[in-house]
Image 1 (cartoon, rainbow, N blue to C red):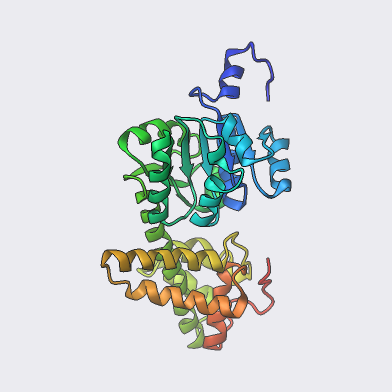
Image 2: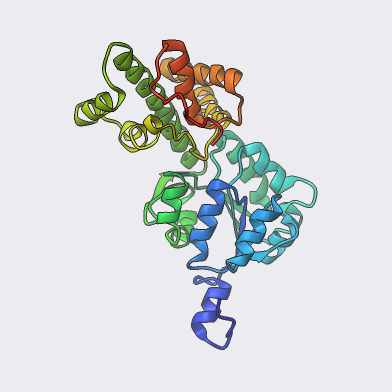
Amino acid sequence: MNDDVSNPSAQAIQKGVFGMKIGYVGLGSMGGALARRLQLAHAVHVYDLDKAAVARMSEQGATPCASLAELAGRCDVILLCLPTSDHVRAAIFGDNGLASSLKRGTLIVDQSTGDPVATRAMAAELAPRGIDLIDAPVSGGAQGAAAGTIAIMVGATAAQFTRVKPLLEAISANVFHAGDIGTGQVIKLVNNMLSAAQRLLTFEGMALAVKNGIDPQRACEILVAGGAKNAFMEKFMAPNILKGKLASGFTLGLMHKDVRLACQLGSDSGVPMFFGNLTREFYQMCIGERGSEAQVHTAALVMDRLAGTHVVPSDADADM
């Protein structure tokens, strides 16, 4: 990075194009990809419990922070991407957390797939201190984040959305205002529930075809050409699952968490969740068999076992 602070463009990058100092908390598979994309346009301060992840970002020009409190004291806008809303709450309100050093006027942008009820509660706690918290979860995977095509779903007031949109557009052009605070996470839960069910129905349909004499590759080819085509079948089944490539960067435990939150939201708001609950229970069974840290695509191995099929090649590496 150019250190010539006398250069106006260098000053803009160091301070942030919009005069904001920016921090990112959570540098895992998704958060790291989002932070790296953001860093193409902005100077970024970073923090993660994983020191190796912080070191990798530092090598690419990010400014490491030794604690959440240090990052909060330096930054005007803080983005987070953490596994659950409980992790977000701990990062904000825990010992030496962000809240201990947040400045009035700071904007917190939660990109986690979290609980909208918990997010609204945290926003309400921070508001009297002059701190805004909004939600902006994403869909499209780490590859979409790296390519700048990921969908960003924002739950915020109109004024908050106007403030944050130019920053989020540094990550992706696909920035959507879902509604008020929490609605970004609502639509993300709907998205992940539909994605989770789509995977399982695809595995089930493929097992049915294979069990009754159709070659897996041919079955996939025919289904993608017809009305059964779906995003999972088109993007993952033939290129990955049928080749035994089960790595996805997303775990069974996280998928179950997302579907569970969607089903709870349905229960709380009086929406029947027939298929969502079935989907949740199948992933619970998969966790019981393979563990919560197993890759989400290993659900295909569970379906193969139940059906007595080999849609996934027998030499697949389930631990990839």
